[in-house]
Length: 543
Image (cartoon, rainbow, N blue to C red):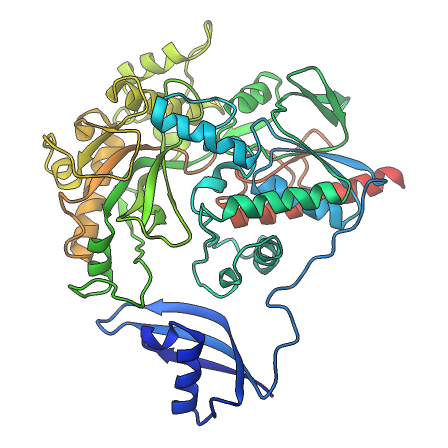
């Protein structure tokens, strides 16, 4: 017999299958011998009160063993004889697009400007140790995309855009822990995700697809109003409709699209800092306990959001027990991001603390004054000037803030930093606490050089969050700048039904880089949708 139960138990009970079986025997009258297996379908922690509970949805196998897999497998078939489609980018959008194409009988040709996921590690390490950024292989570019080394967080609110369960099951099929199917806020861990990504690549290759690393698209090939392929940096051409899944940092692609009159528009994004606390402090705050999380609870998370002068200020991409990493994708940039291993056992916890910006905000002199605009113009190609109405305006503002941070850090990958309470009180931090950031920190007055539009909203947000959680606003916390790559700064316009570009048939802008996703799962779902429309496009062309 199989029985589904919902339990509300203390963390010690939820800690293992055996302790759950003991609880079922004690509280539900089931004999220990009869309960052959317990499968956790959903798990969440309720830490709103001093007594912490874990909510469990269980499938209990009584006097029988499970005969089904814990996850649903997708059948992938050989497509070596199938029509070809080009997938530009091997991040989550591109990988899931390629896998879905295989399901539909289309042969994916994946081109990735960066290196494979293991070779990327060496280039990423050099950012911290030698302050060198390889513009083609870094935290943003390479197999797995920006998500490969940023925790593998799989939580999404975009549940109407596709099948979330399908994305999670595909991850499990390629080696991810099945815990991602039950956890309310699932994550794989930056130490585990590369192997999963590599297995996805092997599936693509074994089914007859192609994957080309260190192969950068430099142009789209068009015939009339149709995209018929791409050209790469070595002059090689690949023919077929194109799923463009470049990720949110492919600025050269955005520049090419704009220069070639391919319709794009600026979109809102958020910018700010990484905020790092001792993990034990966050545990004490969130679990209402001076002893912290104890033996049976995971490292605590938090989520904050508030409105300040008409714009959201909020926490983003929270990494419990994680590290802050240098995520620049080119020279003269400081960009920071956060990641956690699967165990989430670093002594620190961090999150992005960011302020929402809209394209119309660029006209606000507290964001961009005359000196800022002059500095932006210095970064632009000769003969061009900053235009707040340009589709590239938000991207240029990103670049400007990243270069300011680079200058503040001494023109290297050490990051500008300030203690949290010092920032709120407009004081220079004369010393800095220990940090997970391996490239080094430079104490700077972030309150002074960050645009007032952002800094004043961050300050008020911190004051609001400190009132909500006593002890959160503290000089034990460290602000590390700057967090700018929260999403794409623009959107590549596409038809909402066909998902093709509004003017160019055969071009499917995809995922976070195209402005239609905001994380691993949403990018994966968008990749699958683009693959489905691409297959339909190919089928219609053969009819």
